[in-house]
Image (tube, rainbow, N blue to C red):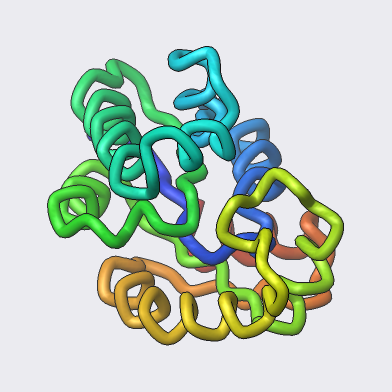
Amino acid sequence: MLKSFTLVGPMGAGKSTIGRLLAKELNLSFIDSDREIENRSGAAISWIFDVEGEQGFREREQNIIAEICNNSKEGFVLATGGGAILNATTRKLLTEKSTVIYLYASVEQQIARTIKDKQRPLLQVANPAKVLESLMCIRDPLYREIAHLVVVTDERPPRFLIQHILESLKL
């Protein structure tokens, strides 16, 4: 059986950073679904949101994730966008094709890690903290629904988190 891992969680939880390190540790390819969407469309995610809206972006995201999960001949580590789990088909696919790791970060940590990032369309509002709190209320139950492992990332160094993941999954 292929060993594939998907990292889910909110903005600023560390999915890309932890994903790269985990992939290196396990000698697997690393895929960031947001970067894959940008590379294939030739456009920034913020531009896609502006032109196609969130629904258009989510359709692209679902298609990319399905392609990655269904066509991988080798194992992978996939870092998804924070809202990828909103789609029930995507949630089902991720749990069937990979071990899902939920990287949990408190809203305070999310704010600290994303406050200066102008590339996050959902945070380009007057009160990003309110947006992040609202998103967590909706998304946290969905992350937990599909997670094989929940890892709290608040103020923990990436190397510690990698070791915790490897030990928890007995890798």
